[in-house]
Amino acid sequence: MLLVDIDFCSLADLDDIYAIEEAAHGHPWPYEIIESDLRHKTGQIFYIGARWNGVLCGFGACRREKSSLKIMNLAVHPDFRRNKIGTQLLIAMGEIGIRLGCKRATLEVRITNYAAQLLYEELGFRRIKVIPHYYEDSEDAFLMESPLPFPAISVATKNNGTHL
Ligand SMILES: CC(C)(COP(=O)(O)OP(=O)(O)OC[C@H]1O[C@@H](n2cnc3c(N)ncnc32)[C@H](O)[C@@H]1OP(=O)(O)O)[C@@H](O)C(=O)NCCC(=O)NCCS
Image (cartoon, rainbow, N blue to C red; front, top):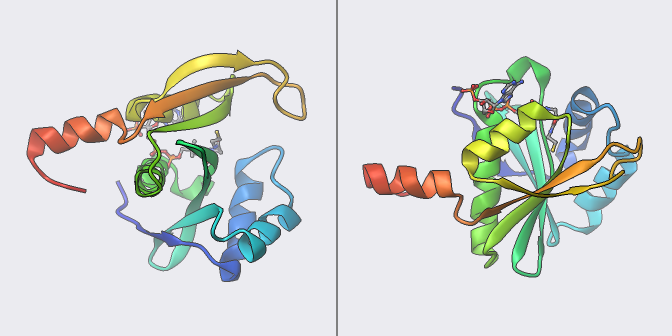
């Protein structure tokens, strides 16, 4: 596990975020969308970054939708994977959701993206339904949902008596 620093991203992180986005997704979000989010939607869409020795190695994006936190994106640079960075980013987004008063978190994931599904299930997400042809290449998505705080985190906290 790499213990990373997690903080909010700013426009200064745009190129690094996009490099990770391009490396992580076959169909990356357009650069202009991320730029517009970072410029104009800072109070609505939250981009958080994981930094190791100052280098951005992963990011997540989320927003509140009524009483739910929508996890909109999660990506870790290929060189940094399997170090629990995705897990740390998700936990941080869960904390944002709790502070925004959200009772649950939801997300969509490609039905063939087993790695991400495993990660989400480890934190407490469960599959709710299939959304047919959700992606632009027509692949189906699973809608997944978890209560907040994430069940896995609540159990760990109860067991060792620590607080996040
Ligand atoms: C999915 C992704 C964010 C995971 O990031 P990560 O930092 O490597 O994940 P973690 O190290 O926190 O993984 C936690 C657990 O998830 C599961 N997992 C993660 N990646 C996995 C993989 N490639 N194969 C199998 N299980 C995997 C494992 O159970 C892992 O625990 P372990 O390493 O102790 O076995 C990363 O692979 C990625 O950026 N993928 C491309 C973008 C993407 O699919 N984003 C999600 C869109 S919905």
